[in-house]
Image 1: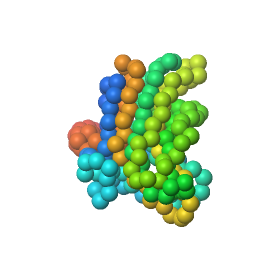
Image 2: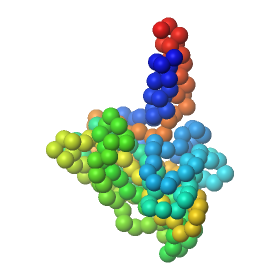
Image 3: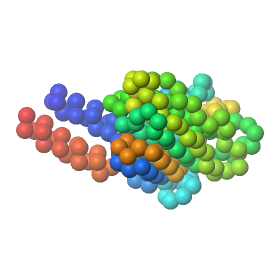
Length: 206
């Protein structure tokens, strides 16, 4: 039983990884949400009632209002000094020159742990304009800080004026100059099913 519980913990953080220089994710699997979060971010949900393109998008909520919540929407691992990363997403904002609004940001981690925070990487200081669905993006040049970190988390940052507030995010795009890095998005249903089934077999044999 102990081994099976441990397996479930591994499954809960498994994510969809792409070994490529460029990848996109639009929550079209109908299940995936976010890779992690920071601050008062609540109720990450894969929704089909309000999207930019396709049939699904991400909805997150800031509740209660406080600080600057961050939704981790992509994770690029296996990076080295000088690698470039370009990322963007579409966010919905219908409040011109006022909150709520979003912007794109990033922070450093190690490839083994998305929660192993190693400092801010900065991002775009421009917020969504409040004219509906809008693409916002930024470009980073990776700095390993003498080898202490090798991964980058792309954040959707929430800036709220009332309590609580919903946000919608769709169509993430990530491009990197690295030929060996992996781009990770939220869990893919097929991968989760295979992991659970495999774990049941292992637990049963033991």
